Each structure stands twice: as structure tokens, then as C-alpha cells.
Amino acid sequence: MKKIVLSCMSIFFLFTSNAQNEREEVDPVGFKKENIFIGGSLTLGFGTSNSYYGGGTNFVIGANPEIGYSLAKWVDMGFVFNAIYNNQRFNDFYRYRQTAMNWGTGVFLRLYPISSFFVLAQPEHNWIKYTQTNLDQPGIPKISQKVQATSFLVGVGYGQRNIGHSGFYTVIMLDLLQEYYSPYRDRYNAAIPVIRTGFNWYLNPSKKKR
Image (cartoon, rainbow, N blue to C red; front, side, top):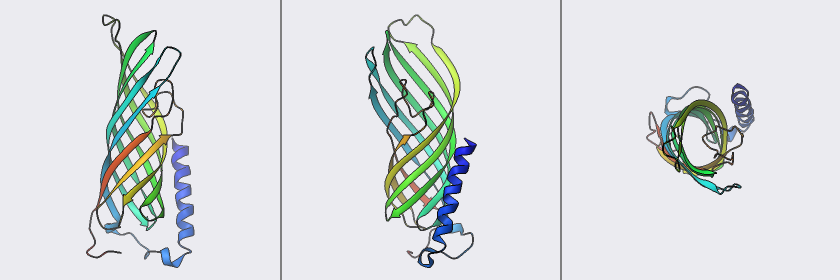
């Protein structure tokens, strides 16, 4: 997790350094309260998978509050928190239902190569509680366990963004890591497409557009 976070921060500082050489893209130096934003998004994921015994379905829903800072017209960075519920049904000799509730935290980096469109990199670490139920043999006790998993989400998105004003965004992402207990992968370790739609509000809205 630390290596991923450090890598993302290194990439960010490299981009920031390059941007400072372009005078038309540089804002005045110094911290700006009006560049701080808070907000969050809803997570929605779905998918199907196939296996020798028949495969299964997967559904994910969650909330993701965040706090960030707009360092330039083309880059945002901040912290994100997760509360995600995952429900899977699959066939392995018997039919099973597996539910998971996880809490997590991470950092995000959004780059806006053109207006309204952005690319996202977001490493996360999650703490998860799994419960598995045998649907064909309800008399068998449920199996529960607590695990941890690291994810590295990347994606592309679209949104209304004007520094100092509220905005919205929608992004679709995939987990590039292959950790078995990732909340963004199904029982067969296939990546689940994750869609998030959210809003951001700046702490001190500007009275004029930039």
C-alpha cells in the first residue's frame, strides 16, 4: 500500500512541476482555502462470471465521502473513504450467497487532460467482513471471516468542474490489482466494473468564474 501511495504522489509532483513551467496554467503560488472541496459519491457495481460449475452474479453498492484540493486547473488530489456492501451468488457444487461489508480509505489523483474529462488513479486499503451461506443446505452454519485487501482503481470520467463552484462527476473504474479479497473482484477474481456518481462542494465558493 505504501509503495502504491508513494508512486502516485511521485507522479503527481512530476506533473505539477511540469505545469509550473507553463505560465498560462500557473495559479498564484500559495495555499487557497477556496480550492478545498468536500463531497462524495455512490458506488454501483455489477457483473456475472462463469466457472466449470455454472458461475454466478455479483452486486456492489456503497458510499464514498472524500476531501480534496485543486492544485491547478488540471489536477485534483485528496483522500477518500469507503463503506461498501457486496452481495454475490455463485455455484460450486452447491448454490452459495456471500455478503461482504467493508470499510476503507485511500488517496486519489484526478488529471483533466481536456475540459470536463478526467483520468483517475486511486489506491485503497479495505477492511472486510465476509459471511457465506449455503443456499441448498440451510442447516449448515454460516461461515464468517474478517480480512484485509489493497486495491488500485483506475478509470475515466466526465464531470462539471469549475474551481470554487460546486460540480458533479461520473466515473467508471477497474481494480488493476488481483488480490483475492478485493471488494472490486468477484469470487473467481475477475474485475468488477465500478461506476461512481458524485458531487463536490468548495468550502469558500468564488463569486466569479475563473
